[in-house]
Length: 95
Image 1 (tube, rainbow, N blue to C red):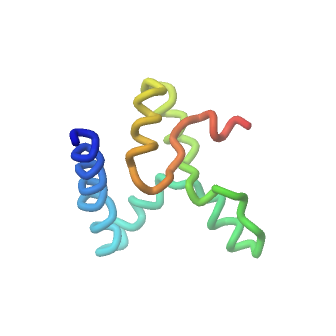
Image 2: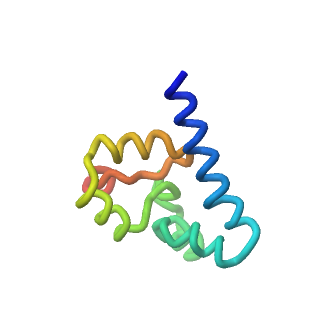
Image 3: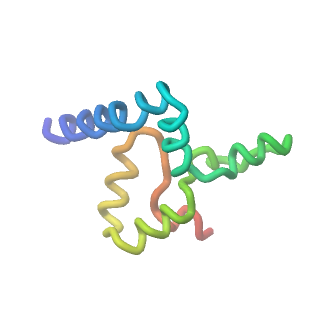
């Protein structure tokens, strides 16, 4: 039950602090997308097929910062709990 409550809380906070502001103003939208890697959109804009899973990639600076400062288990928990498939662990990018 506690895990379900924590998951709901994370999703609701993400919705309130990130998704709703992003839908309502350009600054919020820019804030939302500055954390995402541009690889997926760049490929579409160049009429290329995006790499599989690239829509979930996070900006490399954010990945590096988080992996240098946070425990791997914490990053794994955030990644599994955030609800959008974003990949925070550096191991996804080092293959």
